[in-house]
Length: 169
Image (cartoon, rainbow, N blue to C red; front, side):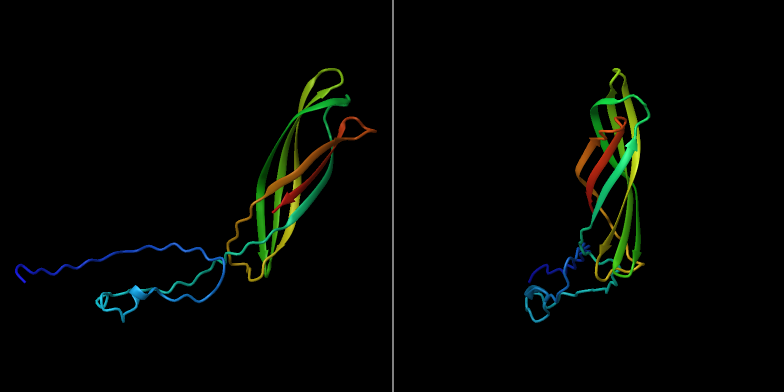
């Protein structure tokens, strides 16, 4: 061939893999050295020791808390409720995760004498999550979801609110 030139191509390939299940995997046929088209293919590989095990588990935490609002006047109506999950802490032991968080509630209410008031309350939530294979040196990511949050006015003391909620972790 006239003007024959050698061309060398190098590709750096970064692969990000997320594992949810463990099983054996075979390389595709074109990456096999027996293939004539790719006989000059040089495959550099490095073995990686993974510390993270991606597993998924759910836990539930039920909250039932009585909160006395600041004003001694009786509540006529709860106008607005905002909620936020803060201070998430996770402690890992063998096959278990202890997860704690605070549910920050902001309650806007109207008193019988027409005053508009706001009360901020922090309610603790805690749950144990069982995950096989979890150890202390692993990293965990825990997500909280507030479900079925309800406020009930105490019928005897009209300035006390009962907070009932289910937290999915």
